[in-house]
Image (cartoon, rainbow, N blue to C red; front, side, top):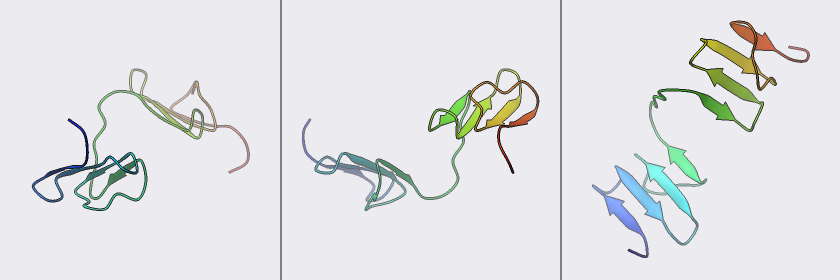
Length: 77
């Protein structure tokens, strides 16, 4: 398949021209544009160390890729 794709108008939109995907969004403005609530099962990493959720150990790191305690913040809050 090539070109754009739309499922139920806004349920899932692939903008092949700009390499963007919209979920519940007909005009995605960034690579993955989600409108509404999202759920992630498993670990989550945002920008390597900006935010890390270690689902295995129930820990969250802010500016820390390997949180050692429940909430592990590196730097000033």
